Length: 252
Length: 315
Image 1 (cartoon, chains in turn green, red):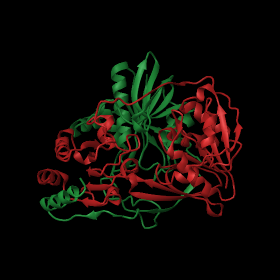
Image 2 (cartoon, one colour):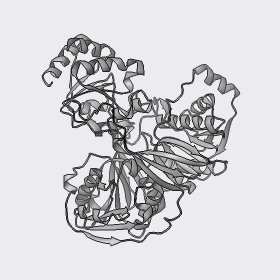
Image 3 (cartoon, helix red, strand yellow):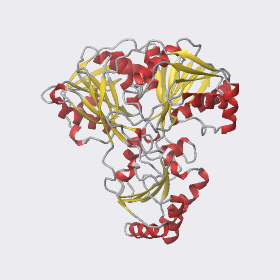
Image 4 (cartoon, chains in turn cyan, brown):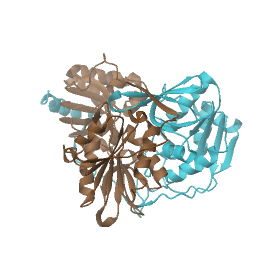
């Protein structure tokens, strides 16, 4: 089975996020991007599935925010094809627009399943994976923590709160919103990514008509009240540890 | 404004998240109606718990007995399609994630996710979303007069939405549910045997900042000294460094220990949902802007690899 994995570049939350002076978008000048962590799990699960059952893994990404790097890294990890979706993707791309662009490209490929990261930190107007499924006219299952193959039918584990799992039997084509792969996403050394940059054919496909009705506008972006109620303990590690020991001892 | 609430139920009980939305819906509706949408099979009896709604729309089908992303999307879409304009509140939960964005496409109504507040004053719908792991709030205004809001758990009071009563129940017939590609098989309850973190008085909880599974020992030593247990945020469990039974948060467990010590946890909304009711929260994180500090009683930005061993030694 062929598996499509959409990779999205999202701001790295380890870095400080600033809001631009207009107050309606992040200040994008110094933003550092990384692959959405759930997309990393989706790619890992796709690669594991391929290793067990054959087929191809095709990674796709919108041409924005250093997508080449993500696609070459996917190739270095074992993706068979990497495709950059070209179009006008300046600034924050709405989930609906991203999903439409991906759907236009996927419709031209031979595929059985899409493994998408279940969510991303910037999905203001909905989850790309679910929107994508509806544009493709196929069912979806979100929050997936297990995928296994029973002779062409899939056994899917979807996670609820409290660690309860619902098991579904699913006949592809389907879009799965992957929460966690069966194993820790593989690490790929920089040298291997560099080699992939030289040897990989990074394909380009046009996004086509991405006119969709997002139906809402950002009116304001702001940081939540910082430092709400924590009393910050200052000093050396030793001094802080002594204060903490006292606080904890007063409680237990 | 007519407000609709998707009722989430599992094993015959309605989630608190649903009641939180019903309470908010009453406030948003003003003089207009609050309608609860219920899908199930032989589940009509649940309507008696939905007294906060003025009306319950109920769809019954064997393939709605258990939640199924495909049948539930189809059912809710048919229940709502002739009832727009309106505001639809969906729990931003595992089930709700499969509904909100899908209904948005099938009804051609905008969706706004990660909602922590919804307003509908003057006929204009505005939604505040918690994005970027809780670091940035984004306020959006809806263009038209309909919207689907996927609302985070724990931001509104469930008590406001809990009312027994006998709201009018209208059966809605839905079709296209016989032939499904997605079939529900069974529910698998979590395996017991491991430490029950919901019973621990002290939890030492680790997040991404612990960096590798080899570093878990410093958390284990601190927990052992305090007679507590080690728990974790989602990335640690997704990486299989600790079993699922140790996960705190939205897809894990809700905990209320006497002392919750968060090591290298940034405090994404999904995690906060599971631990914010702890009696005493201590957070150690080198990022002074980490949202966890908005919920902690005491915060430390020194390196956890220096502070934690020193603390274990002093206790």
